[in-house]
Image 1 (cartoon, chains in turn red, orange):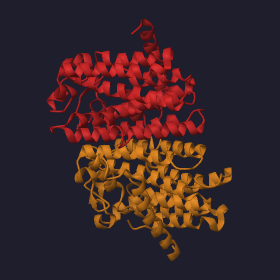
Image 2: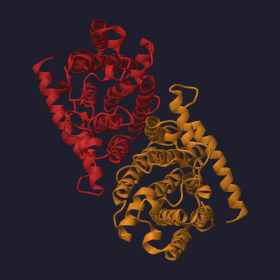
Image 3: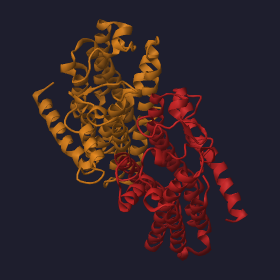
Image 4: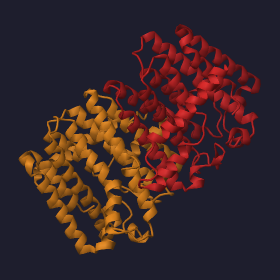
Length: 295
Length: 295
């Protein structure tokens, strides 16, 4: 990754912090504790992978700045809400997230439940507002709702819950991750693109292939990191998958084959982007980032 | 209420059962347990007050059948998700809802959490699809997201949680209920109307006054019923407010003054509808239903 990419990445991350704060309810307004907890859940950390994907795809299609900011914020709010709910005692029961106490530890379980619920509403509200033409907004809202719902993120989570302690085939594991993580990563790419020029069918297909590859790569690398990194580096509890007897790429394929799969998916992502030429440099670099990250 | 109204009410309720089933994910598709639990949470009961409001307002403005069905289903899915989450142990910890085990009792807490999350996404998806013009969809999506979020239902729930065991003024209690219950009831009226003809400003104001009155009346009557009816009649645990030391209209005003307030709000609702003449008969009858119901 070029130093140019690092500067772009830091600039988007810094801008996202401000954008997310602008699109969250005001802490000064009632109910203050809920609003403060929503800010706590969303701000002050995170790799912002989904916003980076929105901006990289948006810039490729010359998207409007406000439309990109709204799409990025909406996708990140859905992601943040899912982390808050996933960390709750009835799910993963985790105390640590991004190096800080999880929302239900910092506040309480009822607040964590409501923070997640309200963040999901807020994500759709942010997308529904703004100056983009209505038909594009509806397409983005529909795609985000699909990615978040029972055929997307929530569905993947349900399959994941049901899979704990069970044997899962590689195909079943892949299906689970396609829903749980892949759907929202794909939505990030597509929403970013839709914030810009109208896509040709071939462009949609290429972006789809790219986002499928990085979606899967993201999870393979997550599994690798969970098995090899320490909690301090991850900012969350490491080794959880093995402790919970969860099926992972590492447990099914072994570490070396998992590393090779991640590298193959990175190359698949690059190949998918070939039609876009130099305009897709940021998307290419994001595929590299997703596979080569250390946390 | 006329026998004509009863027939209309039963027809809308029966139709809603079918409409909701059509707009829910298929039980036959994976993840089956999640989809089955979503059906369990939404179907087979409930007074369908919000869908009745959508249809009553929609028929007044000659709304398109599909647009009314989608608006009614979306609002009811948001309502159903809120019940599932409110019943969880970290909130009201309730075992009984509509005379049946609550979702976390029938399944488990993780499933209840995901059912609520996925139902919220599904509500926005149902509204985003369909053949209504995009600008109207966006207005409806935006209003529903506001009504569901931290300045609406979730915010009211947060204030309610924080209020347990505390002294609350009548004004604070009213503000809490405006968000917790009123916002979604108001949204039901407005979404139904927006599914039809374009509203004049005076018509919007009149509907707003009507929906504010019935929103508050709904909660006053809920408090009266919680204090006076038995669990079998309610289909949920009665006497909970007093047991949890929750501030209610009955605890603040006493039973007689609460009954008088409910009746005053019913009359306010009727007055607000005067400009609409006979076309608003259903909305008038719904105000009567909300105040005179026994469960």
